[in-house]
Length: 211
Ligand SMILES: N[C@@H](CCC(=O)N[C@@H](CS)C(=O)NCC(=O)O)C(=O)O
Image (cartoon, rainbow, N blue to C red; front, side, top):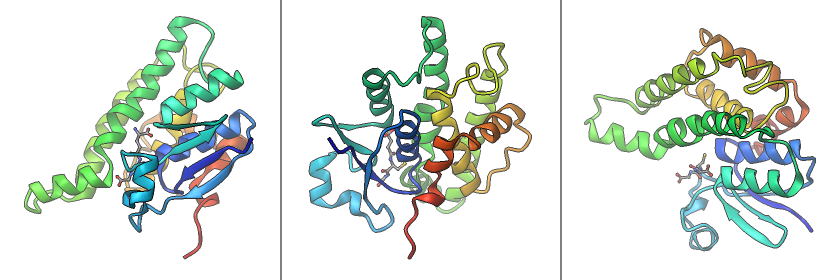
């Protein structure tokens, strides 16, 4: 059965799912929801996802939203190994993943940054808002990675859920012009992950449409 991902190249939440599908060795087809043109707010798409967000996945006869729920579904049904075998390990990996997906990402979306800029009467730009919040969150993540359980990747020597969240966040930092070169663990782990084929194949540059 075909797996369809409602996707947009620069969406970091969709980028996470592209990585997860690749790590699990699954074939899938993209269905572009052009966020720049506002396709996520079209009535047809709102019927698919009332939140008006990407990603959405159609898999095994189901339709799911929310990237972390999607990734855990893939992990559970395909034994993809996104989470460690031990409960403390799983809690740590989820905490790292949530630090990105539930703390940094929600406050750094263009929608929220635009509201912050408007509420500040122009004294705060969207970019300043995003860079400040992203920087604070990534500094905390850097300290969380300062842990014996960190290996070549966020947790040991196998890329998992935390790595799947980290790489799109690092890409996003670059897009907003945030310098994180001093965050040594984050940049080292992200550098290694860039060499992993599933991560390379999911990169936005490989999914952007010309024009
Ligand atoms: N928590 C959601 C976040 C989804 C999300 O914020 N998607 C963004 C792109 S990264 C989006 O579709 N934004 C469209 C909009 O805000 O209009 C997830 O992890 O799937």
